[in-house]
Image (cartoon, rainbow, N blue to C red):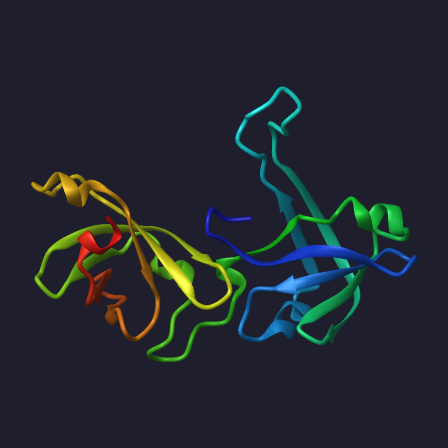
Length: 189
């Protein structure tokens, strides 16, 4: 796997008694994961808050045996998983895909992961920082813009959370590695 892994889904529950699992896909095309014959699952450790908290990540590489779309979810089986108990051990793991294995986006389109690291500039030509991560909580992706330390105003040292919707995003320039926004960083205060 490369360092540009993209989380494409999450194992949410076992399905039946023969080792199948239910996957919540994080893609506009939910069944796109079924095109990948090998799946990489990972579980990141929680921040160490107690002695019993997990301290190392867990990774599994599994071969897709069968799969189908089931409403908004996917139902899949892996060659290596044959019991409900084994399937239960996968619950909560993320399905990750190497960015380089995804098809090239159409002109004018991009993968959200391609925005990470880009500079964010508002209409007043103020550099707000760089996109540190993109989170999705259901309605739309949220850009987490970390300040880059170039600001004179202490109030602008806080991270910005910018919804990725037309109301706030003016333009994305992949070549320039810049995202232009209609956003005042003081709105987050």
